[in-house]
Length: 277
Image (cartoon, rainbow, N blue to C red; front, side, top):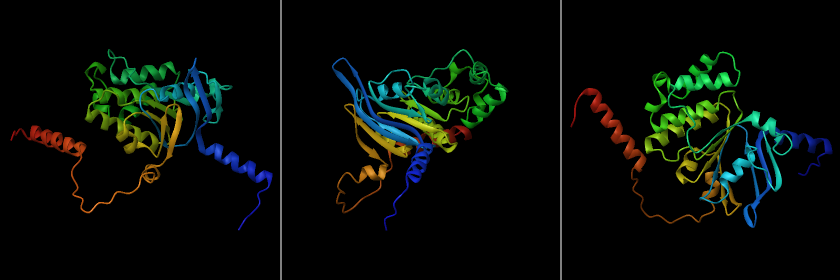
Protein backbone atom coordinates (compact mmCIF):
# COMPACT_ATOMS: atom_id res chain seq x y z
CA UNK A 1 0.00 0.00 0.00
CA UNK A 2 1.37 3.41 -1.00
CA UNK A 3 0.95 6.35 1.38
CA UNK A 4 1.88 9.76 0.09
CA UNK A 5 3.90 11.81 2.54
CA UNK A 6 3.30 15.51 3.01
CA UNK A 7 6.23 17.97 2.81
CA UNK A 8 6.17 18.21 6.60
CA UNK A 9 6.53 14.45 6.92
CA UNK A 10 9.51 14.47 4.53
CA UNK A 11 11.16 17.17 6.63
CA UNK A 12 10.54 15.22 9.84
CA UNK A 13 12.04 12.07 8.32
CA UNK A 14 15.12 13.97 7.09
CA UNK A 15 15.60 15.54 10.53
CA UNK A 16 15.35 12.14 12.23
CA UNK A 17 17.91 10.68 9.84
CA UNK A 18 20.27 13.60 10.47
CA UNK A 19 20.01 13.10 14.22
CA UNK A 20 20.79 9.41 13.93
CA UNK A 21 23.82 10.05 11.70
CA UNK A 22 27.07 11.09 13.37
CA UNK A 23 29.12 11.48 10.16
CA UNK A 24 27.79 12.34 6.71
CA UNK A 25 30.08 12.38 3.66
CA UNK A 26 28.78 13.03 0.15
CA UNK A 27 30.70 13.69 -3.06
CA UNK A 28 34.00 14.25 -1.26
CA UNK A 29 36.85 15.17 -3.63
CA UNK A 30 40.49 16.07 -3.06
CA UNK A 31 43.37 16.42 -5.51
CA UNK A 32 47.02 17.40 -5.29
CA UNK A 33 47.78 18.87 -8.66
CA UNK A 34 46.91 16.21 -11.22
CA UNK A 35 46.78 13.46 -8.58
CA UNK A 36 43.16 12.70 -7.67
CA UNK A 37 43.25 11.30 -4.13
CA UNK A 38 39.49 11.32 -3.44
CA UNK A 39 37.04 11.07 -6.34
CA UNK A 40 33.53 11.36 -4.98
CA UNK A 41 33.49 9.56 -1.63
CA UNK A 42 30.08 8.88 -0.03
CA UNK A 43 29.27 7.24 3.32
CA UNK A 44 27.27 7.73 6.52
CA UNK A 45 28.12 6.61 10.04
CA UNK A 46 25.35 5.91 12.55
CA UNK A 47 25.69 7.29 16.07
CA UNK A 48 27.19 4.89 18.59
CA UNK A 49 28.51 2.52 15.91
CA UNK A 50 31.94 1.40 14.76
CA UNK A 51 32.48 2.17 11.07
CA UNK A 52 35.63 0.82 9.43
CA UNK A 53 37.15 2.61 6.45
CA UNK A 54 39.24 -0.12 4.90
CA UNK A 55 41.84 0.31 2.20
CA UNK A 56 45.42 -0.27 1.15
CA UNK A 57 48.18 2.34 1.43
CA UNK A 58 47.50 5.25 -0.90
CA UNK A 59 43.76 4.62 -1.15
CA UNK A 60 42.88 7.97 0.45
CA UNK A 61 42.02 6.88 4.00
CA UNK A 62 44.21 9.36 5.85
CA UNK A 63 43.21 12.21 3.53
CA UNK A 64 39.56 11.48 4.32
CA UNK A 65 40.04 11.54 8.08
CA UNK A 66 42.13 14.73 7.87
CA UNK A 67 39.27 16.46 6.06
CA UNK A 68 36.77 15.17 8.64
CA UNK A 69 39.01 16.47 11.44
CA UNK A 70 39.22 19.95 9.78
CA UNK A 71 42.96 19.54 9.22
CA UNK A 72 42.57 19.67 5.43
CA UNK A 73 40.12 21.42 3.11
CA UNK A 74 38.17 19.44 0.55
CA UNK A 75 37.97 20.51 -3.08
CA UNK A 76 34.32 19.51 -3.35
CA UNK A 77 31.60 17.66 -1.47
CA UNK A 78 29.52 17.91 1.69
CA UNK A 79 30.88 16.71 5.03
CA UNK A 80 29.26 16.98 8.45
CA UNK A 81 30.32 15.62 11.83
CA UNK A 82 27.92 15.56 14.77
CA UNK A 83 25.52 17.62 12.58
CA UNK A 84 28.12 20.39 12.08
CA UNK A 85 29.40 21.30 8.62
CA UNK A 86 33.15 20.78 8.38
CA UNK A 87 33.64 23.70 5.99
CA UNK A 88 31.48 26.35 7.71
CA UNK A 89 31.51 25.19 11.37
CA UNK A 90 35.05 23.84 11.94
CA UNK A 91 35.21 24.99 15.58
CA UNK A 92 32.05 23.06 16.44
CA UNK A 93 33.41 19.99 14.67
CA UNK A 94 36.68 20.16 16.62
CA UNK A 95 34.74 20.36 19.88
CA UNK A 96 32.85 17.20 18.89
CA UNK A 97 35.77 14.95 17.98
CA UNK A 98 38.92 13.32 19.20
CA UNK A 99 41.62 12.10 16.85
CA UNK A 100 44.05 9.32 17.70
CA UNK A 101 46.84 9.03 15.16
CA UNK A 102 49.02 6.13 14.14
CA UNK A 103 51.47 6.65 17.01
CA UNK A 104 50.62 6.98 20.71
CA UNK A 105 50.95 10.62 21.81
CA UNK A 106 51.78 10.04 25.47
CA UNK A 107 54.42 11.55 27.76
CA UNK A 108 56.72 8.68 28.73
CA UNK A 109 58.25 10.56 31.68
CA UNK A 110 54.89 10.91 33.41
CA UNK A 111 52.82 8.10 34.89
CA UNK A 112 49.65 6.94 33.22
CA UNK A 113 47.51 8.81 35.74
CA UNK A 114 49.59 11.98 35.41
CA UNK A 115 49.08 11.92 31.63
CA UNK A 116 45.32 11.79 32.06
CA UNK A 117 45.23 14.45 34.78
CA UNK A 118 47.36 16.77 32.63
CA UNK A 119 45.00 16.53 29.65
CA UNK A 120 41.94 17.05 31.88
CA UNK A 121 43.49 20.21 33.34
CA UNK A 122 44.43 21.49 29.88
CA UNK A 123 40.75 21.11 28.94
CA UNK A 124 39.84 23.12 32.08
CA UNK A 125 37.76 20.28 33.51
CA UNK A 126 36.90 19.99 37.18
CA UNK A 127 37.79 16.89 39.23
CA UNK A 128 40.68 15.94 36.93
CA UNK A 129 41.78 13.22 39.36
CA UNK A 130 38.35 11.57 39.35
CA UNK A 131 38.24 11.74 35.56
CA UNK A 132 41.66 10.08 35.36
CA UNK A 133 40.74 7.33 37.82
CA UNK A 134 37.51 6.56 35.94
CA UNK A 135 39.34 6.19 32.62
CA UNK A 136 42.11 4.10 34.17
CA UNK A 137 39.50 1.67 35.47
CA UNK A 138 37.57 1.72 32.20
CA UNK A 139 40.67 0.79 30.19
CA UNK A 140 42.05 -1.71 32.74
CA UNK A 141 45.07 0.45 33.61
CA UNK A 142 44.42 1.02 37.33
CA UNK A 143 47.21 -1.35 38.43
CA UNK A 144 49.71 0.56 36.26
CA UNK A 145 48.40 4.04 37.09
CA UNK A 146 51.45 5.12 39.09
CA UNK A 147 54.05 3.61 36.75
CA UNK A 148 55.94 5.68 34.22
CA UNK A 149 54.54 5.25 30.73
CA UNK A 150 58.05 4.35 29.52
CA UNK A 151 57.53 0.99 31.27
CA UNK A 152 54.21 0.30 29.51
CA UNK A 153 53.80 -2.27 26.75
CA UNK A 154 52.70 -1.13 23.30
CA UNK A 155 49.12 -2.19 23.94
CA UNK A 156 49.00 -0.35 27.27
CA UNK A 157 50.35 2.85 25.70
CA UNK A 158 47.74 2.64 22.96
CA UNK A 159 44.94 2.12 25.48
CA UNK A 160 46.19 5.11 27.47
CA UNK A 161 46.36 7.17 24.28
CA UNK A 162 42.75 6.32 23.46
CA UNK A 163 41.70 7.07 27.05
CA UNK A 164 43.37 10.51 26.81
CA UNK A 165 41.46 11.25 23.63
CA UNK A 166 38.16 10.61 25.43
CA UNK A 167 38.69 13.28 28.07
CA UNK A 168 35.91 15.80 27.54
CA UNK A 169 33.44 13.12 26.37
CA UNK A 170 33.80 13.69 22.64
CA UNK A 171 30.84 12.00 20.91
CA UNK A 172 32.94 11.05 17.86
CA UNK A 173 36.45 9.58 17.79
CA UNK A 174 38.69 8.92 14.80
CA UNK A 175 41.14 6.05 15.19
CA UNK A 176 43.78 6.10 12.45
CA UNK A 177 45.56 2.71 12.32
CA UNK A 178 45.24 2.21 16.11
CA UNK A 179 47.10 -1.14 16.18
CA UNK A 180 49.92 -0.35 13.75
CA UNK A 181 53.17 -1.87 15.05
CA UNK A 182 51.58 -3.70 17.99
CA UNK A 183 52.18 -7.35 18.83
CA UNK A 184 49.19 -9.77 18.76
CA UNK A 185 48.44 -9.38 22.46
CA UNK A 186 48.59 -5.59 22.21
CA UNK A 187 46.22 -5.59 19.24
CA UNK A 188 43.66 -7.65 21.16
CA UNK A 189 43.90 -5.23 24.10
CA UNK A 190 43.17 -2.28 21.82
CA UNK A 191 40.30 -4.13 20.12
CA UNK A 192 38.70 -4.64 23.52
CA UNK A 193 39.10 -0.93 24.31
CA UNK A 194 37.51 0.09 21.00
CA UNK A 195 34.51 -2.18 21.63
CA UNK A 196 34.11 -0.53 25.02
CA UNK A 197 33.97 2.89 23.34
CA UNK A 198 30.98 1.95 21.22
CA UNK A 199 29.41 0.26 24.21
CA UNK A 200 29.45 3.62 25.99
CA UNK A 201 27.77 5.34 23.03
CA UNK A 202 30.82 6.82 21.31
CA UNK A 203 30.82 6.84 17.51
CA UNK A 204 34.06 5.34 16.18
CA UNK A 205 35.48 5.88 12.70
CA UNK A 206 38.18 3.23 12.38
CA UNK A 207 40.78 3.79 9.67
CA UNK A 208 42.64 0.56 8.99
CA UNK A 209 44.30 -1.63 6.39
CA UNK A 210 43.98 -4.76 8.50
CA UNK A 211 41.15 -6.99 7.27
CA UNK A 212 40.85 -8.96 10.51
CA UNK A 213 40.62 -5.73 12.51
CA UNK A 214 37.64 -4.51 10.50
CA UNK A 215 36.08 -7.97 10.71
CA UNK A 216 36.43 -8.10 14.49
CA UNK A 217 35.26 -4.58 15.31
CA UNK A 218 33.08 -2.92 12.70
CA UNK A 219 29.31 -2.71 12.51
CA UNK A 220 29.72 -1.53 8.92
CA UNK A 221 32.70 -1.63 6.56
CA UNK A 222 33.45 0.61 3.61
CA UNK A 223 36.23 -0.32 1.18
CA UNK A 224 38.07 2.68 -0.24
CA UNK A 225 40.03 1.98 -3.42
CA UNK A 226 41.76 4.54 -5.62
CA UNK A 227 39.78 7.38 -4.09
CA UNK A 228 36.33 5.79 -4.35
CA UNK A 229 34.11 3.71 -2.06
CA UNK A 230 33.68 0.48 -4.01
CA UNK A 231 31.74 -1.44 -1.34
CA UNK A 232 29.85 -0.46 1.82
CA UNK A 233 27.84 -2.71 4.13
CA UNK A 234 27.82 -5.05 7.09
CA UNK A 235 30.19 -8.01 7.08
CA UNK A 236 27.27 -10.29 6.20
CA UNK A 237 26.30 -8.06 3.29
CA UNK A 238 29.86 -7.93 1.96
CA UNK A 239 30.11 -11.73 2.15
CA UNK A 240 27.10 -11.97 -0.13
CA UNK A 241 29.10 -10.22 -2.87
CA UNK A 242 31.02 -13.47 -3.37
CA UNK A 243 29.38 -16.71 -4.56
CA UNK A 244 29.16 -19.38 -1.85
CA UNK A 245 31.80 -22.08 -2.04
CA UNK A 246 30.82 -25.74 -2.20
CA UNK A 247 32.28 -27.55 0.78
CA UNK A 248 31.90 -31.29 1.27
CA UNK A 249 33.73 -31.61 4.57
CA UNK A 250 34.98 -28.96 6.98
CA UNK A 251 37.21 -29.64 9.96
CA UNK A 252 37.38 -26.67 12.30
CA UNK A 253 40.94 -25.68 13.04
CA UNK A 254 41.94 -23.23 15.75
CA UNK A 255 42.94 -19.78 14.55
CA UNK A 256 46.43 -18.48 15.19
CA UNK A 257 44.90 -16.01 17.63
CA UNK A 258 43.30 -18.83 19.64
CA UNK A 259 46.57 -20.79 19.64
CA UNK A 260 48.55 -17.72 20.74
CA UNK A 261 46.18 -16.89 23.62
CA UNK A 262 46.00 -20.53 24.76
CA UNK A 263 49.77 -20.85 24.84
CA UNK A 264 50.48 -17.62 26.71
CA UNK A 265 47.53 -18.25 29.04
CA UNK A 266 48.84 -21.68 29.94
CA UNK A 267 52.33 -20.27 30.41
CA UNK A 268 51.01 -17.58 32.78
CA UNK A 269 49.24 -20.23 34.88
CA UNK A 270 52.37 -22.35 35.14
CA UNK A 271 54.38 -19.31 36.23
CA UNK A 272 51.78 -18.51 38.88
CA UNK A 273 51.98 -22.00 40.38
CA UNK A 274 55.74 -22.06 40.17
CA UNK A 275 55.83 -25.06 37.85
CA UNK A 276 57.51 -25.44 34.50
CA UNK A 277 56.58 -28.46 32.41
